[in-house]
Length: 399
Ligand code: CA
Image 1 (cartoon, helix red, strand yellow):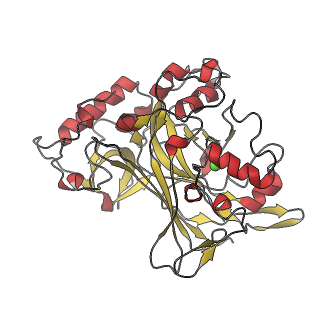
Image 2: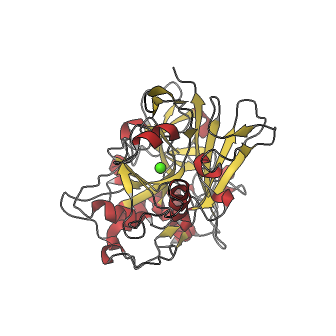
Image 3: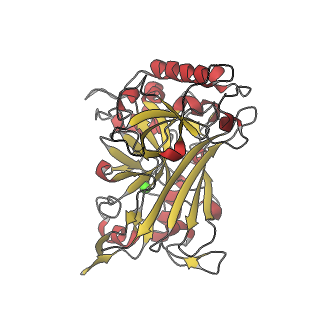
């Protein structure tokens, strides 16, 4: 629902929020959990320009789980309140500079699942392994996913230690094929009781907001272990997420019709309203000796075959409960063109074509010291653009 909080004419008394290109204008108001330098206690906050509005007067917890458990109408009401407090003309109040705050995980993530919702990613990867039949016959009927590990979901900025594992038969050691995957994650809202699936018509109310996700992957370990049950240790060593939760309400102007399905989904997955979000996502690499980061890819989240509501409805369709603060990730976001490929496995055609970088360097997979930064933006005519912040991680040596 578009309301006064989306008005493109709204300005804030926080000057940095009105700057052209600011990721956190007053139309965004993302939520996060932060800790001030020298303090022990974490607090919930709302990002506005370069600052944080301390939200502990409304949310007196060290995580956003309680907020996420609220009904969608209460979450909308809070957004309205913060929008009114921060808009130009309202009395100014004390804010905290983002530079003085350490951003933590926004929620205590009970469970984390990772989908495979980009048909372009599934086709590109499938072609490498099964050129004659890249997509499995189930792809267009059932949203594919696996259960991930919430214990290794880390906030942006956490160093990523190169994992060791079985790289093939009789060969244990540090992965030689470390990769990233550009994804969007969604935090679950109130959720469902055991045995009571979330119908597709209600799924949107159970999605609180989104973040950027980097599903770090060790391809040599993955290749050896993934059959027949799917990825295990090749993924579970680390997943990085951006710290600000961009709410479903903030994303409302950027909601669009999903990509067309050749095959009608089963009735329980059919959406009557537009269920896709138009978010451009980018991956940037900064190697140890590089002067400037280089963009490796950009792609649109709108191109996914399955939407977030379809993923959540499918996830709970067997009665499995989803709880406030659970994280579901979309799977690698790739598009039809080469520049839309959201991981090195795809960009390098399984390592056959190195990515050439400006300084004469090249990459097949990630090296120690490499930093990957994911970014995301939403733009639409007649609305103010918003950003998702960033999700960064730097590779450190095994050992
Ligand atoms: Ca993934």
